[in-house]
Image (cartoon, rainbow, N blue to C red; front, side):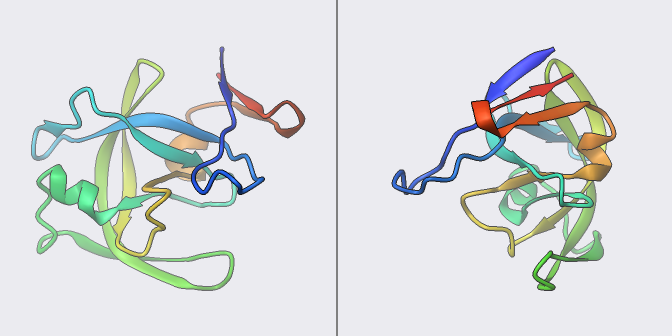
Length: 137
């Protein structure tokens, strides 16, 4: 059992606290891993899948010319296009393969989004907004 505080990203005058955690990503196919570097990830119960910025895939050496194209529709009905590729997610001393959609259409302040398939199906998450924390088991 681990508790994580909610926090807010700049601009700091934004009154909204969100459920962010730090993760590492890797690519089994290219044998590259974000070494000790962690990246911020939004835990998003409204997202069906896990997403990340395409530049992370570039860093991990993914050949996008051979990657399968994918699409997802956001809650506001905006279409996001990208590439589907399995990445290794490192979180809480665990690692496992997750199909990610890698796209340039993801907001810069949230480079990784952890969704239902790939994150929620591996952990039990309890959100406690009143105390600005979440518990992940």
